[in-house]
Image (tube, rainbow, N blue to C red; front, side, top):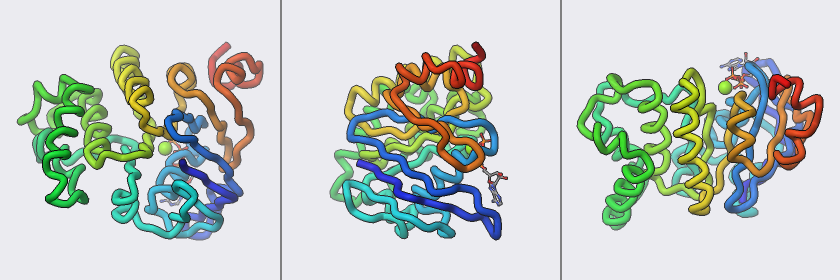
Length: 236
Ligand SMILES: Nc1ncnc2c1ncn2[C@@H]1O[C@H](COP(=O)(O)OP(=O)(O)OP(=O)(O)O)[C@@H](O)[C@H]1O
Ligand SMILES: [Mg+2]
């Protein structure tokens, strides 16, 4: 579904990512795991077309999307729930969700309405707070809103940048239950995380990123048995 081939990314003069190869098959949840500064967000932003200083190839269903912009990629079925949520604070929950569907033509308005119901089913708390200003939501609710807003474009590939960031374990586990549900509904997900414990519960495979390079990859059921992964990421 999504293929990143030999991608390197620069910010100004500094190279941040080095020859990254990764892929996500249709319906898979794949985790991009790494510590602070490893380059996870850089990878996500490069895939979604926010960073143009890059080489290599990114393919969506075998078609090159390397040089498409974020707004074009939404129309190709890709959406990003960014790190740090970035909801529109003065706008209501409903308005934030509606903005997630901005790229869809008027002819899809019935489908958009259905997707709004779908998001409210996935996150009932958002339904309860439909008219509340997004800036006054709790951190967990804002994270749900950021994911919900990304889902309103009805993506085939969802990129999620650190949904667990700064949230209490109970909320994290609620959010990850929903990710699992999305996976079961056939949405393809690339999940950037530092929280290996949670990410490995929902992801089938993982890539471990360190200082801009992929150092390990494999099935999560195998990685949890790997002593170096246990030591570095699972606190064993
Ligand atoms: N706008 C920028 N300009 C220059 N360098 C940047 C910029 N944004 C990030 N970097 C650098 O790129 C490297 C990777 O950062 P990135 O945010 O991708 O890491 P990350 O894995 O997402 O970390 P975190 O877990 O803290 O979110 C870091 O060394 C960072 O300083
Ligand atoms: Mg990041």
